[in-house]
Image (cartoon, rainbow, N blue to C red):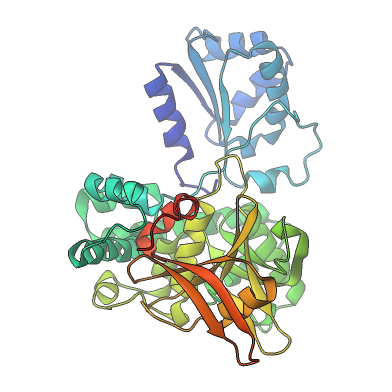
Length: 433
């Protein structure tokens, strides 16, 4: 996970709730810890660590936490011996820039003996829980098709979602908002986080001019919802350097690529058009700060019609779609675009069980579905989804295209605040709302 997304807190919380002794090693703060792992014998390693930390490490009652392991990535190879010889000892390694650190590793990874877990920013539901809005959270996770949402509740949930757009899901930022509700402090914390990511650019030294990384990081929020074009980032810089910068920011999980797929079948990634892709940022709150958005401005808008043609709505939907993946899956997002015979584009295309479901994002409560109609006619899928600011509904669509052809499908329409329940609601079609 990206820096400051909550990895360390989660591991500490796990040890506390499980009643385990936490043996925490931070390889960025104390790189000398690495010398204790020169042996392949876990027993010897634990003896050395215990002596150094002045404690006795009982494998049955402890949790070994290797934090900031990207600073000493070769230690990952030692996890094999812990898995084989000390299976009773839980060992967790965490780090930012981990994919970057492992890109050119020369050691043998313990394949099949470690499990990867990917951490994303807080979801909207987690944002509500952090604010102690437990009743709203319970309402969302229990919502069923056909349940009538009152105007009072709909407006309240939309207000909360607009707040989430500005605050975002970075844990320390949300914590500050819950405790103090000071927008100036939120703005400062966002800028501090962005500065932290910029400071990490020095770790790419020798691979790329850091100014190219800065160019990409500042462009992405402005170019949301658009096909990524290298020359738009910096017309005076070479496309290859921008391409490399984007690749490195992807490895660092600061930016996420959304590839264009033909969407003719599964897996979606088997038919991508590598030259066509969009890019979203790691967190909508950081995006909002880079774009200079204010909570007051958003809350006075009837719909989520914010900036750059609803690009921020596409950002938050993409971010929340990533959180719908299982923790052990590295999230991948796709969209569909037709360049021939008139341009058409569907914002996201997802796999649900063994089917493909297109998703249209509409910043307001209404909007044309021309591209979606075209997609559904070409692919002959039975279900599509729209995310917008309106009430939830299921609608059978029958539409005549300009070609005279007729297209028919079921449209699932969900307000932004129910996006986290998408998988469940697609399974439980129930009664139309």
